[in-house]
Image (cartoon, protein in one colour):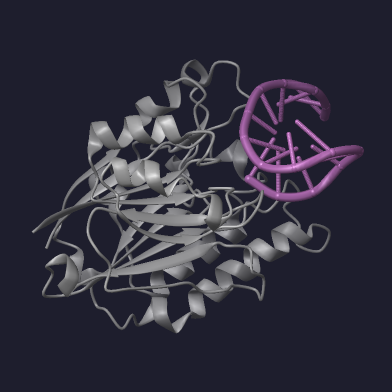
Length: 271
DNA sequence: ATGGTCGGCAACCGA
């Protein structure tokens, strides 16, 4: 069975619902993981998603900030969410595809929105950066992620860290810029190692090829300057390491009208 | 070295 899973920081699902429709019509993912939905669950545009074929949903949203959601063509066996750093700011949701979706071996899907961390890369004077580092520490020790009850698991989302040298347009110039500082890169790598997660995107497009999923709104010529960062990620457990048949970064979405500053990433699993 | 732009939601906060 072939299942495609997309992840996209949509930066307001209500504002950009037409772009979401355009994306799913073009790529037809079975599962769509969104971040920064900025939408309370009761106001989530579920009817529009149902018309697009995504009749199953798991929502963890709030008014104004953050928020994650999983939309699916296939029914879930279960859904859950986890609180990190004792803050209920809607940064994680998980769903399991299993018997109800026709899968003999269940697939756990984790959708994350890691805190951006503010501008100042010093946790002593920037509480937002301290929160980001603590969030990554908590992901590292999270038993459910490290030794998942489901050996088949995929972790996607906006992790807000570009960990490798060629995940940013200039390694040297971003060493002091939040998203690429050594401490957060080390902490993200430690999360990955603790869960034995495989970096799917870099499996398809290894270093030293540049690979980005985000281009700032502040650049007047984002495509020409191409000062991007790889902030969005797709990780799988070793059991799925040889079952990822495709990976696409839908860069064209950055050029659509009123775009998100992030673009979708799609991975295809052969289960 | 600096400022540059978005979205939510109605003055700034978060990114």
